[in-house]
Amino acid sequence: MAETEADHRPASQVVRELMRDYIERRREEREYDEFLRRKVEVAGASMRAGRGRTNDEIEADFAARRAKTASQA
Image (cartoon, rainbow, N blue to C red; front, side):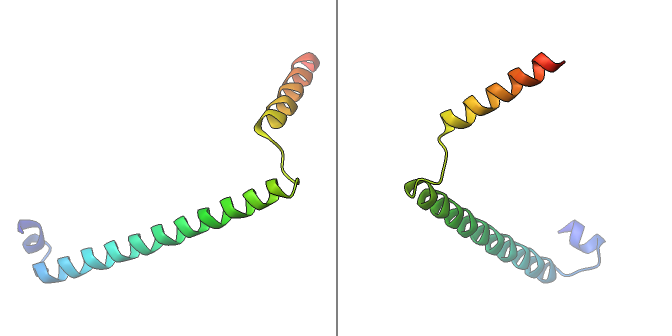
C-alpha cells in the first residue's frame, strides 16, 4: 500500500492494472499453447505422410557434417 501512496495512485487503480496485465498474459499464453498444438499436429501429419525424418536420421546427418568439418580444419 505504501508503494501506491508513494506513486500517488489509488489501490483500486493498481488492482485494475494488475488484472489487465494478468488477463493479457493469460491470453498470450493461450495463443502460444494453440500455436504449439497446431505445430505439433502439422508435424505429426507430415511424419505420418512419410515427409519427415526421424531423430536418428538427423543425428546421423549432423554427425557426418561435424566429421567433415573437423577433417577440413
